[in-house]
Length: 307
Image 1 (cartoon, rainbow, N blue to C red):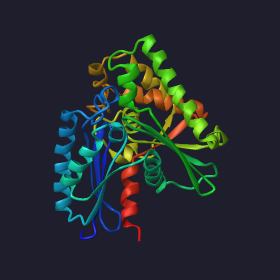
Image 2 (cartoon, rainbow, N blue to C red; image 1 turned 30 degrees about the vertical axis):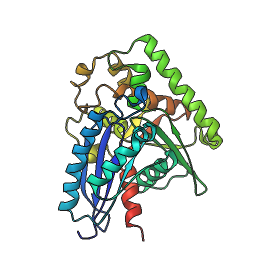
Image 3 (cartoon, rainbow, N blue to C red; image 1 turned 45 degrees about the horizontal axis):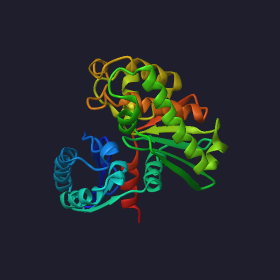
């Protein structure tokens, strides 16, 4: 395992790591809900308790790296750190703990790594492949056409939409309306920024990744305990997205936790993620998406192993 490499993703809602050996085989995949973006949308800075939660997890990941004799790694931070006035201070401390390069990704970089990771094990199809990466603070859209990747990072994420519009509890008609308007405005901006998106409407294979999609796949499977083989490349219909969005919207976070497959730490923000997912499917006129457990971490480790 002397050639093992590691990727760490300090996301807005979760902090995750992937350690692979020199052949790209996964040795460790681990995820902890840390809610780094707690309050960032309102305060503009990372809260001390949110940083501390993340630093504790990073210390655990450093131990995993030592156990696997990791020689190289990359720690990335995304939306929460991009938006925070104290993001650089967080990144310095994260670098000290992890012991390897730490950087904040721009939205396009985040989309590129995510696209590479999610598309790496997909079979070929005639239609273009698009990823939708619903994070805690942002949602990335990326599609490859004629060998060129077109992407856009929207200021939409399950935590951001929850805090700004939807709320954590039972969804009211007013918060439903505000949430949908917020999402539609960001989708309008995405289509204005990347006109090529219009070219693939109704003609795209949609691949969903990150926590919202993974949680939805577990709920759809009724899978109380995580099983990668059950959720990876699971086909999810738009009807399924709407069913769970509407059901969870009528429930309190405590009630949501009674469903087999609901991940502790996502019960308050998953409905917002499903609002985003449904709106994306509607805008691109697709009736199903493919869930992918391969994501930004896989894209990063592949790049670290590339000659």
